[in-house]
Length: 433
Image (cartoon, rainbow, N blue to C red; front, side):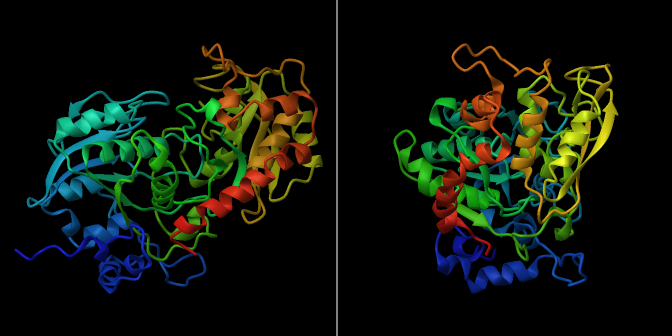
């Protein structure tokens, strides 16, 4: 049997030599070509999974492989990476680990699939949703894995939980002495960094560590940032042995539509890439008594409540926010908040992705919604941190400024220095320029 190439030949784990490796270049060249982009340039985007699969997963031979993935872990032929790996008899797959919504994606928000035997592959699928690093380490030990592969499409926002599944998995891999491999994918909302920094006092499942809200990184880049900045301060300290299989042909300023890649919903309420663009800001409305559009065909693009009226859209359009318009909209959620009730509100329409600013737009929407007497901040069962919006935004600051009647410019200016500091901190870990 041909010996496997060195890990640096296939992945980028941290050095310029690895990124420029001729052997890695041959791996990328062997990947199936992508379709032409919108401009007909012919420069397709090849995710890390396709680059590795084109080599027959050679980099994983001789390892006991555990895979953290969900329905987004697909190749260009629409087959799942786990199915592709399982078809190679020389690979040893120790187990699969499903995050929120489950490995096959059958569970709703805040739910998961219980442990089961996958009927297609016969592999054991472990329920990893809500697992902290200690529990994750226990699952990895139970499976016998010595290499953990992560392949999930992220949407570029701190309160989307998959990146924290990855963080816990990295800490767990370090605990048991396993390697960690990220099959990288594009960030569908690009490189833009924006929004408030999470404060440690408001860490939760929707924001575990102090990063800004719209981080502007791929999961591979974020894994590098975690490994360089956060893991050394976690528990006993130290880094995990990290390998990132890079995306080929991705331009960080591009949109998801520019990549030519199919959109596989990463969760039931993220049906399109347009949803992801809106969600980076309108995810805030989960922290209010307005519907964020769950139970409609356009979650996070429809926002409203029974107590709103047409003035809401008129006031928002009068602000002339860049790259966006608001259509007066009415909808009846089939589940979640205001189920079965007619909600008045808006449909958010991005007219210019290059100018659209998701977080300031959502702040403007909050400011206008707060002017209605029936508006309320959603509370949960946490007595010390009762407001859900504080967990989403990372501190009480946003809520307090909106309640105090501050305008959009004052509110967004409050975190401008945090964004600049984060942009400087992330720079050494970026793979795509």
